[in-house]
Image 1 (spheres, rainbow, N blue to C red):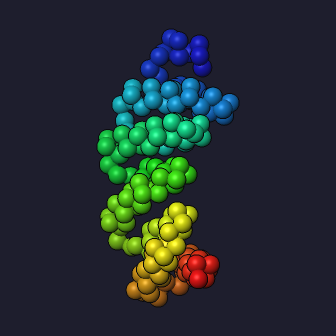
Image 2 (cartoon, rainbow, N blue to C red):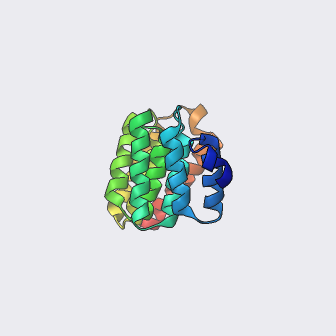
Image 3 (cartoon, one colour):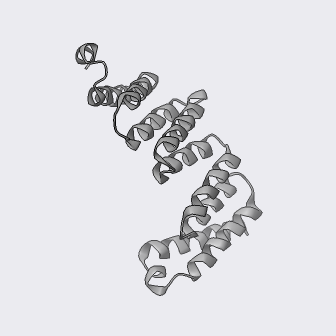
Length: 175
């Protein structure tokens, strides 16, 4: 790849292949540089490049985690608030214990979503991890209440029943 890229410096696919290879070799900062170069020279919007770059930077940790979130935000400015990029940023913020930033981001996602129960459950999990038990309890309860408003055809699917069970278990832990 190095030889090929020495002659074709702006070949997006080659940059991506090398970035992925570098990531597997745990040379994350170099991988991120190739992802950045690929993003900059690509003629099309490719959210997966922003996502993969964020993943390698977050895995590197420290100051790179903030850089990962900034890169995701750049992607969202370019392509709009894609949920995959939002969730990646949210996960990085939670891992970095930046709970208020994560909650603010989650609030933005929730506001745009027609169904709130899953986001309210995630809010409760973040609040619980932050040690804010009373607020977590409120979020879990609100998620259960939102589920009660769903029609039976949606409420009784396995995923919703699992979520309901999970929420009840989390509420029991918080008592």
